[in-house]
Image 1 (cartoon, rainbow, N blue to C red):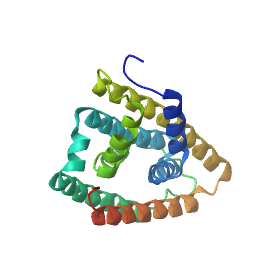
Image 2 (cartoon, rainbow, N blue to C red; image 1 turned 90 degrees about the horizontal axis):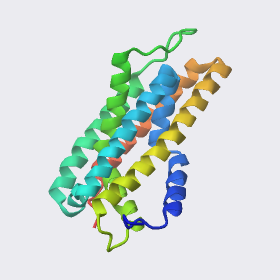
Image 3 (cartoon, helix red, strand yellow; image 1 turned 90 degrees about the vertical axis):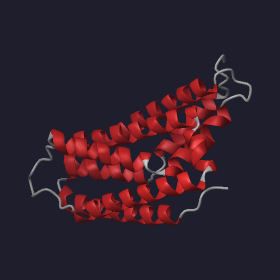
Length: 212
């Protein structure tokens, strides 16, 4: 390819396998879907995908490399990200499910909040930035004429695949909740589980060392 991208099929398969692997993003999307319905889940997906877009462009212009090379930059982003993860985790732990029979109808303010939570938890995690910097170059030739553009193209492909996978996942969660009809208790425990996970991730991030 003129962009210097190689083994694109392998990149797509690797990305899909990563996207379907259960993790904090999937749990957050599930929790928002159970609490606010499919619209809440899609808002969370939009925030997370937008955060990945920021990391894609950061990798393209070399900002991710700065996080890898600079201990000071890594520490600043690490502590801000850890604090925000702890904040989101505590917020989820304190949330209560909707009253029995009450349909989740989030307003625009709620959807914006969900979007920004997903966005910031992704953007403020230096590990995600370093992940993009580690993954994307594996599929770009060393002598590629336009490496930044190749970074962007691969990042957009990864994000598009992730968005499709997570929207389908959110739809399945919303459908399952409608059929179960006992979603309030499950939603409560999902929120508690997500909250505990984000608190644990915040602590783990705070204790993380800069990659060598």
